[in-house]
Image 1 (cartoon, helix red, strand yellow):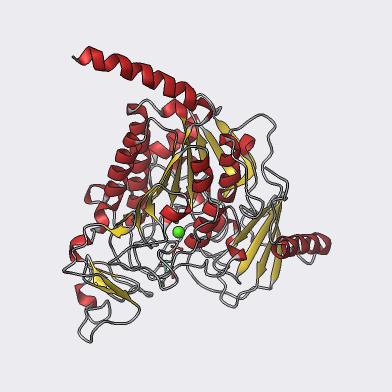
Image 2: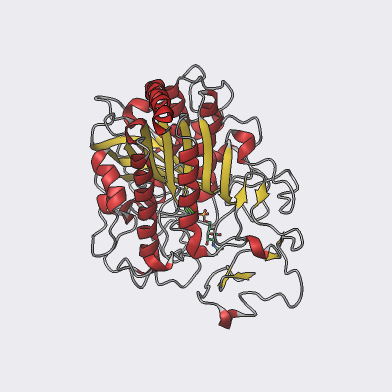
Length: 514
Ligand code: NG6
Ligand code: CA
């Protein structure tokens, strides 16, 4: 009996393999708050953290030394990664609060909708943080629509906001998973009742103390941003998130292995509260922040194993990136500073999360495609915002005229083709609409600070005054410590105008480009 079934199966899989050659599967693994120096291949020392699986991608693929995300916080990077347009062009793209409505409107072309046009099955698994639902915000007990499903994703399994923002539940497609209708979920900005326990009233019960914000509703012994009640059966344990992403990703890949697929694997690691699974606790030499990196590396290894097991490795392009640079103390006492030792989360760069210094957006960026990408290191400038146009080019889909406004087709550079060029400029932003910007052209880096609240400094979250414009020569001063604006007024002016032009023009991708 078995033989009769096996023969047609082999025949079909051979057919689909040849069909898929020009349409490889695409997996984008996006880490959260992972800095340039946080992985072995980018300079982390093994006595601090080991990341063998991420390192393996870099050794067998292309490791970018000028790979960027577009913002130094989560929501704007994710917005521009998906839409291919700078987040500073759109209101409401700063760090999204728990009850944020869907930020990307149905009908907006995204990397997922483009790949869907190319015949891909598409999914996002993990952190979303781009809002859910109509203008009123998410209807947690009803239909969470619009969401990823309305902008090109066939399937989604989500951490709706962040792990430190309420509620700690999974969303699967349009619904909170495992929600008991008799225990409705309420999410709000104000204490629901006088006796509602919070990180302030019940501070002595917490297993991780807060030091900035994070003192509203308590879940799993940890204070959060925002209040919620109900939905108890739906709540997760922080320790189980990485396992759940993996379980869902394995399942979805397996179910879709016969079609070309695009998976956005969006890990919550290493965002606060860093609470890795018990088996990873203590695995690095650097407290939970390091242990969360070990856990993230485990996810990367498991994804590779799944691809190997299903014989998909040679037909899958894996892209590993981060959503913003590193931060140490991000509001909880988790010993990230105390256990740091000589580890350098941003590598040689200055600043980190929330800043427009290089450390804010220059992050690990690796492309891996066995047999197609020659292993090596690339110094070309590439950004997560370019993945939309580049993946559209890879799969033969046209870009819309009025969308994907700032995404460049850098496919050849991403695949490491000889002589292929990356961007000639990189624009970065911190958070939201009217904030701070960075622009890099070659070795020159201009910082522009419009915001009154500016983090220009180290990883300590201290805010210091800076002039509106500062200029750095990265060739001599990789850490952006010496402002040379006075010495090079022409360069400073040119870059200032280039940035302003990009902002004012409303797009930076030429209208006729593919
Ligand atoms: C900040 C939070 C920080 C983190 C960040 C968003 C406080 C004091 N700080 O407001 O902990 O949640 O927002 O991070 O509340 S991101 O990576 O999702 O953009
Ligand atoms: Ca982040």
